[in-house]
Length: 528
Image (cartoon, rainbow, N blue to C red; front, top):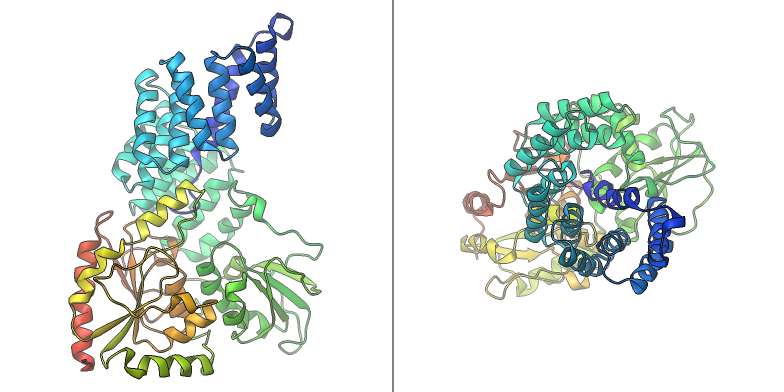
């Protein structure tokens, strides 16, 4: 499931404290251990986890064998990002009280946070065996099953949750996410719409509906909904707030680069910035002086954009500006539809001196005269975010599985993969990624290639923005931007999509790519 999927864990773990608090005796009746436990639960419910933690620990120091205290302490530890410690507490609670559904649920949440999906699924199964109408356990298991690419099973759990509570907005949202992963976009949109009908201010429902609309090609219907991203739990803390007002799309007047100073600030991932920075020349054409703030690896490559007066490093001091806007709000400001995407490439360029340097190095006997093909096989694992980490596992390819590509004669591979996992020694490739300081360096290397083959990652966006042919190896549940039912991309004219037909099945994809690569090599006549 993609990086905007609702985090069911949050609701479930909070319910642990709520359930325990309802059973707590009044302060006048409490023994010292119970008094400390009651105070811990009140702080936990108020979200004051750091203060709750020592109260739980004091209660357990006074009376160690308290399953409720152990379970709630584990829940607090998990909420604080300490799932390994939480596991110990949940196991202790279950040793004292084996029939304890909420402890099994939260044990599953801790396993999921640690990336131990099979154990998480088993723990949720135990919770449901003890409490068959446990809505949160169905919801949580659906989340993990989706993360593992087991979408049909996830849909069954989502449907079970809705049979218990047909108007539960989080369950409706979960079902929408699973349906979207299955490519059933109309049904997904309907599920999100049902959630919004119950709770009109439900931000996750709006944001996920936006992504389903985008995947369906209904861009003009989607951009307004996409603005709800700033109210979702995963993004609310990252919203930038300035004294200057938000730009609403009006023209500045005057010649490009002479009008009011407009700050456009990057958001989300490097690939998102590379894809949507294409709008900056359109902004400049409205008469603005454009300032672009991006992560450091993108500063030099984004400085090649037409119409940008200044590029600054995200997190450093900003120059003065009159207006601002998050980068991914630009398509909405320009009312972009499927037929009006600013798709002309290249809109980024590599430094000519760096291109010439790599041209010389690649030509000095290091590569032959065959096709030069760049490869990127993995994305950013986003450690600490289990849903995003699971998505990265689905989109990435274990390097050894790329072996069929090496069976094509007359092709020389160049690694564009930064960091691990590395190619095995049996799959030789020209690899200088350790010398790449930023994406401008990578762009100079890409400029010397005939083709880039990449999974859904920043490398694919970089090559597309440079106007290079890209063959995208895509998972069965694609990000909205790659849409469904098409081999091309409206965003990058030179990009071709090779998509899995079944979750995890890269063999069929790589067989097709190998055949097309052999045809391309034959058509070009490049050998050696």
